[in-house]
Amino acid sequence: MKEERYFYDSALGGELPQEEAHHAVKVLRLQAGDEINLMDGRGTFCRAEITAASNHHCRYRIMSKDCPPRDWEGHLHLAMAPTKLMDRVEWLAEKATEIGFDELSFLDCRFSERRTVKNERIEKILVAAMKQSHKQFLPALHPMLSFDEFVRTPREGDKFICHCYSPSDIGEGSTKCHLASLLRRGVPTTVLIGPEGDFSIDEVRLAETLGYRSVTLGRSRLRTETAALVAVHLMQLANAVDEATNCSTPNTSDQ
Image 1 (spheres, one colour):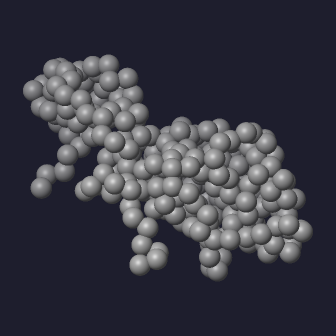
Image 2 (tube, helix red, strand yellow):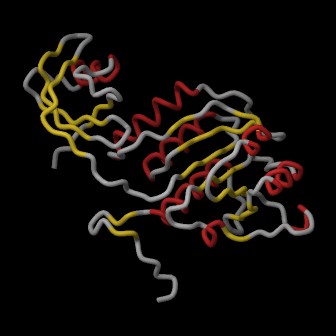
Protein backbone atom coordinates (compact mmCIF):
# COMPACT_ATOMS: atom_id res chain seq x y z
CA MET A 1 0.00 0.00 0.00
CA LYS A 2 1.39 3.38 -0.99
CA GLU A 3 2.16 5.60 2.00
CA GLU A 4 0.00 8.71 2.29
CA ARG A 5 2.18 11.75 2.91
CA TYR A 6 1.02 14.58 5.13
CA PHE A 7 1.95 18.24 5.00
CA TYR A 8 1.84 20.68 7.90
CA ASP A 9 0.14 24.04 7.56
CA SER A 10 -0.92 25.55 10.88
CA ALA A 11 -3.07 28.16 9.12
CA LEU A 12 -4.68 25.92 6.47
CA GLY A 13 -4.73 29.11 4.43
CA GLY A 14 -4.47 27.75 0.91
CA GLU A 15 -0.70 27.78 0.47
CA LEU A 16 1.91 25.49 1.98
CA PRO A 17 4.69 27.03 4.10
CA GLN A 18 7.92 27.44 2.11
CA GLU A 19 9.71 24.37 3.49
CA GLU A 20 6.66 22.16 2.98
CA ALA A 21 6.16 23.58 -0.52
CA HIS A 22 9.78 22.79 -1.43
CA HIS A 23 9.34 19.19 -0.28
CA ALA A 24 6.09 18.78 -2.19
CA VAL A 25 7.27 20.34 -5.46
CA LYS A 26 11.02 19.74 -5.64
CA VAL A 27 11.35 16.43 -3.79
CA LEU A 28 8.04 14.65 -4.47
CA ARG A 29 7.49 16.35 -7.87
CA LEU A 30 3.82 17.05 -7.12
CA GLN A 31 1.92 19.14 -9.65
CA ALA A 32 -1.36 20.96 -10.04
CA GLY A 33 -4.18 18.44 -9.87
CA ASP A 34 -2.42 16.13 -7.42
CA GLU A 35 -4.16 15.48 -4.10
CA ILE A 36 -2.42 15.88 -0.74
CA ASN A 37 -3.18 15.40 2.95
CA LEU A 38 -2.86 18.34 5.33
CA MET A 39 -2.77 18.74 9.11
CA ASP A 40 -2.79 21.89 11.22
CA GLY A 41 -1.37 20.40 14.45
CA ARG A 42 -4.54 21.39 16.32
CA GLY A 43 -6.70 18.39 15.50
CA THR A 44 -7.79 19.02 11.89
CA PHE A 45 -6.93 16.85 8.89
CA CYS A 46 -7.73 17.92 5.34
CA ARG A 47 -7.80 16.43 1.89
CA ALA A 48 -6.75 19.02 -0.69
CA GLU A 49 -5.97 19.45 -4.36
CA ILE A 50 -2.91 21.35 -5.54
CA THR A 51 -4.01 24.27 -7.72
CA ALA A 52 -0.61 25.78 -8.53
CA ALA A 53 2.96 24.59 -8.04
CA SER A 54 6.21 26.46 -8.72
CA ASN A 55 9.75 26.51 -7.37
CA HIS A 56 8.79 28.39 -4.21
CA HIS A 57 5.02 28.07 -3.92
CA CYS A 58 2.43 25.35 -3.62
CA ARG A 59 -1.19 26.49 -3.49
CA TYR A 60 -4.07 24.18 -2.73
CA ARG A 61 -7.84 23.94 -2.47
CA ILE A 62 -9.32 22.15 0.53
CA MET A 63 -11.74 19.42 -0.54
CA SER A 64 -12.71 17.97 2.83
CA LYS A 65 -11.96 18.34 6.54
CA ASP A 66 -11.96 15.82 9.36
CA CYS A 67 -11.54 16.35 13.11
CA PRO A 68 -11.19 12.84 14.59
CA PRO A 69 -11.44 12.30 18.35
CA ARG A 70 -8.25 12.56 20.37
CA ASP A 71 -6.10 9.45 20.69
CA TRP A 72 -5.73 10.00 24.44
CA GLU A 73 -7.47 11.61 27.38
CA GLY A 74 -6.01 14.16 29.76
CA HIS A 75 -3.06 16.46 29.08
CA LEU A 76 0.45 14.98 29.14
CA HIS A 77 3.36 17.28 29.96
CA LEU A 78 6.99 16.15 30.05
CA ALA A 79 9.63 18.43 31.59
CA MET A 80 13.22 17.22 31.33
CA ALA A 81 16.78 18.40 31.78
CA PRO A 82 18.36 18.23 28.30
CA THR A 83 21.31 15.91 27.84
CA LYS A 84 24.81 17.07 26.94
CA LEU A 85 24.50 15.44 23.51
CA MET A 86 21.65 17.06 21.61
CA ASP A 87 21.06 14.05 19.38
CA ARG A 88 19.64 12.25 22.43
CA VAL A 89 17.21 15.11 23.07
CA GLU A 90 16.21 15.09 19.42
CA TRP A 91 15.67 11.32 19.54
CA LEU A 92 13.45 11.74 22.60
CA ALA A 93 11.42 14.53 20.97
CA GLU A 94 10.81 12.38 17.90
CA LYS A 95 9.85 9.19 19.71
CA ALA A 96 7.70 10.90 22.34
CA THR A 97 5.73 12.63 19.57
CA GLU A 98 5.20 9.32 17.80
CA ILE A 99 3.83 7.86 21.05
CA GLY A 100 1.77 10.95 21.82
CA PHE A 101 1.98 13.75 24.38
CA ASP A 102 0.96 17.40 24.68
CA GLU A 103 3.82 19.52 26.02
CA LEU A 104 7.61 19.46 26.22
CA SER A 105 9.58 21.71 28.57
CA PHE A 106 13.30 21.87 29.30
CA LEU A 107 14.71 22.35 32.80
CA ASP A 108 17.91 24.04 33.90
CA CYS A 109 18.82 22.06 37.02
CA ARG A 110 21.70 22.18 39.46
CA PHE A 111 23.46 19.23 37.83
CA SER A 112 22.43 19.98 34.24
CA GLU A 113 25.03 19.24 31.58
CA ARG A 114 23.40 21.60 29.07
CA ARG A 115 22.08 25.09 29.81
CA THR A 116 20.70 26.06 26.39
CA VAL A 117 18.54 24.41 23.75
CA LYS A 118 17.78 25.63 20.22
CA ASN A 119 14.04 25.22 20.11
CA GLU A 120 13.91 25.85 16.34
CA ARG A 121 15.61 22.52 15.65
CA ILE A 122 13.42 20.65 18.15
CA GLU A 123 10.30 22.24 16.66
CA LYS A 124 11.17 20.84 13.21
CA ILE A 125 11.64 17.38 14.70
CA LEU A 126 8.27 17.58 16.45
CA VAL A 127 6.57 18.56 13.19
CA ALA A 128 8.26 15.77 11.23
CA ALA A 129 7.35 13.17 13.84
CA MET A 130 3.75 14.41 13.98
CA LYS A 131 3.43 14.05 10.21
CA GLN A 132 5.11 10.64 10.12
CA SER A 133 2.92 9.21 12.89
CA HIS A 134 -0.28 10.99 11.72
CA LYS A 135 -0.85 12.58 15.12
CA GLN A 136 -3.63 15.15 15.38
CA PHE A 137 -1.74 17.55 17.65
CA LEU A 138 1.67 19.17 17.59
CA PRO A 139 3.17 19.13 21.10
CA ALA A 140 3.68 22.58 22.60
CA LEU A 141 7.36 23.39 23.03
CA HIS A 142 8.51 25.81 25.73
CA PRO A 143 11.72 27.77 26.29
CA MET A 144 14.06 26.44 28.97
CA LEU A 145 13.25 27.48 32.53
CA SER A 146 15.20 27.15 35.74
CA PHE A 147 14.02 24.25 37.86
CA ASP A 148 12.92 26.66 40.58
CA GLU A 149 10.82 28.76 38.21
CA PHE A 150 9.21 25.72 36.61
CA VAL A 151 8.10 23.99 39.81
CA ARG A 152 6.82 27.26 41.31
CA THR A 153 4.56 27.84 38.31
CA PRO A 154 1.00 26.67 39.18
CA ARG A 155 -0.14 23.65 37.17
CA GLU A 156 -3.38 21.70 37.14
CA GLY A 157 -3.67 18.00 37.80
CA ASP A 158 -1.11 15.50 39.06
CA LYS A 159 2.58 16.39 39.30
CA PHE A 160 5.43 13.91 39.65
CA ILE A 161 9.21 14.07 39.97
CA CYS A 162 11.29 11.03 39.00
CA HIS A 163 14.57 10.52 40.85
CA CYS A 164 16.88 7.85 42.24
CA TYR A 165 16.91 8.85 45.92
CA SER A 166 15.24 6.78 48.61
CA PRO A 167 12.49 8.37 50.72
CA SER A 168 14.87 8.38 53.70
CA ASP A 169 17.28 10.56 51.70
CA ILE A 170 14.60 13.19 51.15
CA GLY A 171 13.25 13.39 54.66
CA GLU A 172 10.33 12.61 56.93
CA GLY A 173 7.01 12.23 55.16
CA SER A 174 8.50 11.47 51.76
CA THR A 175 7.22 8.39 49.93
CA LYS A 176 8.02 6.88 46.57
CA CYS A 177 5.84 4.65 44.37
CA HIS A 178 6.09 3.56 40.75
CA LEU A 179 4.74 6.18 38.38
CA ALA A 180 2.48 3.63 36.68
CA SER A 181 0.60 2.98 39.92
CA LEU A 182 -0.30 6.64 40.43
CA LEU A 183 -1.38 7.80 36.98
CA ARG A 184 -5.07 8.66 36.69
CA ARG A 185 -6.93 8.56 33.41
CA GLY A 186 -8.09 11.90 32.10
CA VAL A 187 -6.23 13.94 34.71
CA PRO A 188 -3.68 16.53 33.47
CA THR A 189 -0.25 15.13 34.32
CA THR A 190 3.21 16.68 34.56
CA VAL A 191 6.32 14.50 34.96
CA LEU A 192 9.80 15.84 35.70
CA ILE A 193 12.94 14.01 34.52
CA GLY A 194 16.35 15.11 35.79
CA PRO A 195 19.83 15.24 34.25
CA GLU A 196 22.30 12.34 34.18
CA GLY A 197 23.48 13.37 37.65
CA ASP A 198 19.84 13.38 38.87
CA PHE A 199 18.07 16.23 40.57
CA SER A 200 19.71 17.55 43.71
CA ILE A 201 18.13 16.56 47.00
CA ASP A 202 17.19 20.20 47.57
CA GLU A 203 15.39 20.27 44.21
CA VAL A 204 13.41 17.15 45.10
CA ARG A 205 12.52 18.58 48.51
CA LEU A 206 11.39 21.86 46.92
CA ALA A 207 9.24 20.02 44.38
CA GLU A 208 7.59 17.97 47.11
CA THR A 209 6.72 21.09 49.11
CA LEU A 210 5.04 22.45 45.96
CA GLY A 211 2.84 19.39 45.41
CA TYR A 212 5.01 17.11 43.30
CA ARG A 213 5.09 13.43 44.28
CA SER A 214 8.33 11.46 44.16
CA VAL A 215 8.13 8.44 41.87
CA THR A 216 10.33 5.71 40.45
CA LEU A 217 10.38 4.20 36.96
CA GLY A 218 11.68 0.85 38.16
CA ARG A 219 14.87 -0.70 39.46
CA SER A 220 17.00 0.00 36.39
CA ARG A 221 19.01 3.20 36.39
CA LEU A 222 17.96 4.86 33.13
CA ARG A 223 19.60 7.50 31.00
CA THR A 224 17.75 10.81 30.91
CA GLU A 225 16.25 10.35 27.45
CA THR A 226 15.26 6.75 28.22
CA ALA A 227 13.56 7.76 31.47
CA ALA A 228 11.75 10.56 29.64
CA LEU A 229 10.44 8.18 26.98
CA VAL A 230 9.34 5.63 29.61
CA ALA A 231 7.43 8.39 31.41
CA VAL A 232 5.68 9.47 28.19
CA HIS A 233 4.81 5.87 27.35
CA LEU A 234 3.36 5.24 30.80
CA MET A 235 1.26 8.40 30.62
CA GLN A 236 0.07 7.44 27.15
CA LEU A 237 -0.86 3.89 28.21
CA ALA A 238 -2.83 5.23 31.15
CA ASN A 239 -4.80 7.60 28.90
CA ALA A 240 -4.94 5.85 25.51
CA VAL A 241 -8.20 5.48 23.63
CA ASP A 242 -8.67 2.28 21.67
CA GLU A 243 -8.78 3.12 17.95
CA ALA A 244 -11.10 0.31 16.94
CA THR A 245 -13.85 1.01 19.46
CA ASN A 246 -13.10 4.62 20.43
CA CYS A 247 -13.25 3.42 24.02
CA SER A 248 -10.79 3.84 26.86
CA THR A 249 -8.43 0.91 27.12
CA PRO A 250 -9.81 -1.45 29.81
CA ASN A 251 -7.88 -2.03 33.01
CA THR A 252 -6.95 -5.72 33.05
CA SER A 253 -4.79 -5.68 36.15
CA ASP A 254 -7.38 -7.63 38.16
CA GLN A 255 -8.14 -10.25 35.52
